[in-house]
Amino acid sequence: MNVLDGAIDTTATTMVWAMSAIVKNPRVMQKLQNEIRSCVGRKARVDESDITKMTYLKMVVKESIRLYPHVSFLIGRECVSHCQIGGYDILPGTKIMINSWGIGRDPRTWKESPTEFRPERFENIQFDFGGNHFEMIPFGGGRRACPGYNLAISTIEFMIASLLYSFNWNTPDGAKNEDLDMQGAGNKSIRRAKPLCLVPSKYNWQD
Ligand code: HEM
Image (cartoon, rainbow, N blue to C red; front, top):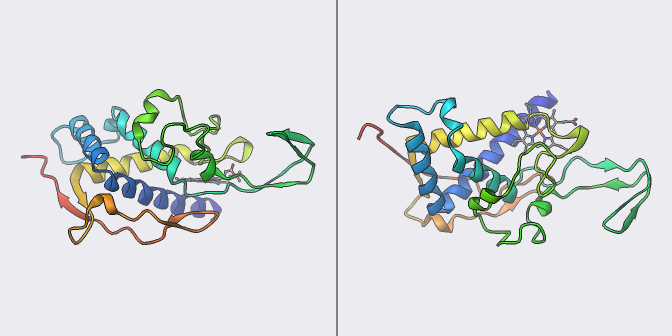
């Protein structure tokens, strides 16, 4: 039950944030759709094997999770032996909360416009979600890191590729995509404050 709980809501919410970020940034959406449609070619659906060729898609997913990690505070830790972090003495028994949201937006690490959605920043950064790159740790790290991160990332990449291959997406009622509200709600886990409502229009791959 815990695995189901930890797997479904996290993946769905991360997916909603990723679609929000993509639609709000038409330049990114266009570039991503060009990549997806050229990798998939002329057929009705995306195959899993197409995803390996989509380098920009992987950057978009990383950038979206950097800015909008669903789990903003990791599972709390208790310090077992005296250590120093950033000049602070941490005594045994101290409860530690790790702010994954803040780490992903830290201007000391993410020097170029840290709060902007710019997937291209990952062109020059070696990064995977395994918990060994502490510049961002949306799946945690160490022994209690998320064991489902590979499944989560493959699911999200596949869903985004499929949604953007088959449809073009816009905000409803003629509103500008750029004006999409990105307000979050929650503290330990963050979801959209307002539900995401988008209008799909079918892309005809046979044209
Ligand atoms: C985007 C989707 C997901 C996100 C953002 C996410 C995030 C996390 C985070 C932050 C933790 C705590 C890590 C730590 O404190 O160091 C965690 C733990 C966990 N996750 Fe995920 N997760 C996702 C998907 C999944 C999936 C798909 C599964 C299973 C199929 C899963 C199973 C678990 C389990 C069992 C734990 C507890 C591990 C432990 O306490 O030893 N998660 N996840």
